Length: 202
Image (tube, rainbow, N blue to C red; front, side):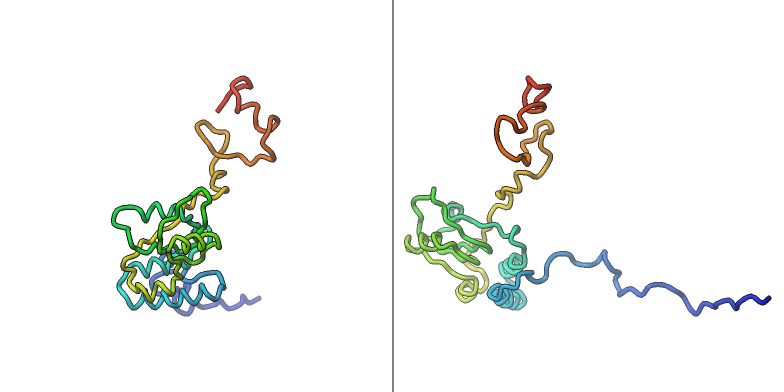
């Protein structure tokens, strides 16, 4: 009985990896928006060109923000914009928000503002225009200020979302995290751990 012939190795074995390695060197983050919105894609095309052909960091930052998800492009109210634009050195500049600009009914006297944003709510636009201000789109801004001169780049607060109140562990000492409760009332999360008279209170 003869044994089968042994396979002979031809040269070194191994996996073929591109020069410079694989995962460890891969850049993370978006290089294009996920949204298929045609207008957003056109603005990205414009700012890609400006970021490449100019040395202004402003264009690179705007381009990066255009790629982000909606959660990372929080809205900003006209009240917040007015507060930032009232600071020393910001008079007469254009406020730039890569996101939505919303109205605030608690804000009574809207000053004259020039705001550039991805979109405006109808009431926010009406109030800015009524106060003698101006609402610009990002392509209009590119014509007016291709290097971002005379602009103030602003962004809204990410942690103002309702879901952010639930992040963390509720019911642990010194925690003010909001628990997910079916309803708010006498019978819900009001006993042990919530009142000193019922065992302990956190």
